[in-house]
Length: 303
Image (cartoon, rainbow, N blue to C red):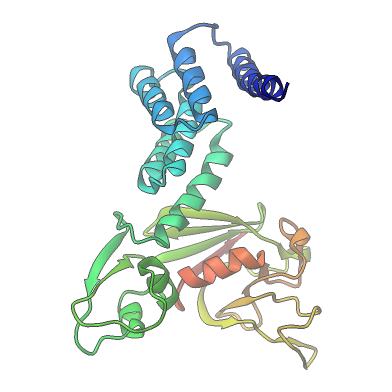
């Protein structure tokens, strides 16, 4: 009996996959039974059963053979996921980039941007050297701070990318270092923060901005960074561990006094115009951004 129940459950899962594909085809006016659809179905079944190599083969064949198929954008998205599942982040990044460049009007663009952002940050924090990185050989007298300053990056990013547990480095050691520069654009109308490196998309973060349009517009620079910042409220200090401290776990101040990018004690406010003028992020997002961008990073805020 138990075996029958398991078989029934497996059949049910497979049916959901097939039904989903049929609905997608119907929405896009694709005739049933075409070769592209067969390859996509094969890939979905293989991925569902954990056969990522088979799924990859079917999706790569579909994309190579039917690049203009209405299913090609979905195939690219699925292929990127297969690459991620195999920890092939560079391949996943190239696949998501291809989808965004080729299918600019696809309804899959928002999800692709989200996935690409996560992959980009994963690559930044990994030892994989990409076209956005170079390798620096440590010289006698070098410190992480000196290398970070010379390359306009952060000590935290170098440590994360190279798996360093402390600040100790040795001559002739080779370190992955991002080429940079990083830049930030905050769009108040969308409540989004765009991070780029060398003008290439890295990640899009949801943020909260100022109520009554109080977040200043213009181009600024990050001029200070603080972990677990104290909040100064009407001349009184609110400790970092206080539940009333609205700054969260990180502060990236800009060269307009009193304004900056910081964390949050209420993530439900993200995506809205509710702050006193600062740009607010979730703590996990601002901690990630804090490790990536150095003092001196350009911050452009637009309406």
